[in-house]
Image (cartoon, rainbow, N blue to C red):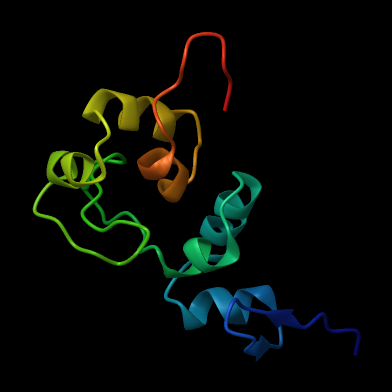
Length: 110
């Protein structure tokens, strides 16, 4: 048998990426999409999946696990304009980057 073991951010070892994704209540494709988008392993595994009927940009929990009533409230807490946050998420920034990166200054890039 030629199995590839997978290790999560806590150092736990799983027999496969599929088993690791299942352990965190996620689909394997969700984990891979997040990693391909540049998410850190911890964020990719611990961010809850979007629920059926939930808007893609409807975040209620930040990267630290703090919960908010609305996405707007979360943005205010982190000092980021809601529209800036939305643009960053649409551009496939990680949740952490979208909330903690200072506003762009003229001529600078991410």
